[in-house]
Amino acid sequence: MSKHERWNTLLELLAASGKLEVEEAATALDVSAATIRRDLDELAEQQLLIRTRGGAVAHGVSYELPLRYKSTRHAAEKRRIAEAAADLIAPGEVVGLNGGTTTTEVARALALRFASGRADTAGTTGPAPSGPALTVVTNALNIAGELAVRPQIKIVTTGGVARPQTYELVGPLTVGVLTEVVLDVVVLGVDGVDPGLGVMAHQEDEASISRLFAERASRVVVVTDSSKMGRRAFARICGLDRIDLLVTDTGIDAETVAELTEAGVKVLTV
Image: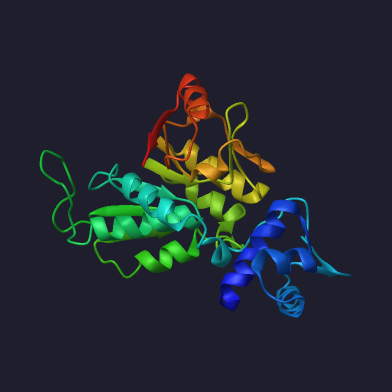
């Protein structure tokens, strides 16, 4: 196991329980306690955890892994979800994307789907040949960076203050841009889905921007792997009544599907 893989696993264990003991981690990763101590020391230097006697604890109750460490979790499921979500987008539409690992995969799938400038245009009223095949509005710096080199896709970034964990722009400047645009569809990544509370994010500033994305869109699509089902996060984005479709993997249980369907949310599993 490489150092990156060890760090990713340690951070996942810490996110799950909020604390970690050296001996426990050494057993789980099948490495020496000395290796775990070095790893924890280096992660603490990056301010990804707080070192304690005999282990480490998370920074706070609403612990959030940086995007670069979350990208390897449920990677295959996220790619399938992203491809299914990209297939829902018609040429010429204006699409909103918030930040996150799954929406980043959606952006990549859209880039491939619209690589020729126009995709699946038969029977549709798309843009003029000289216009963009797609317009993407995003508050995520990494998504904007990946799509900016695609001349067939028009990129609109929101402005705002960047959050280092997720590369998302938040704050009044972000709000100012979003209130001036109209979206055909928004694809939202979330940190939790609860049949009673709706969809949630770890951070209140990101949740408020995602809520505004939903308010500006005619259709709201939530993309998330099944591990987020039944999970709660600190800040509520919106209720299920605002969501048109949830795209997830086949790991979702039948009871949850029934609850979401009863709430009026269509569920697509891939």
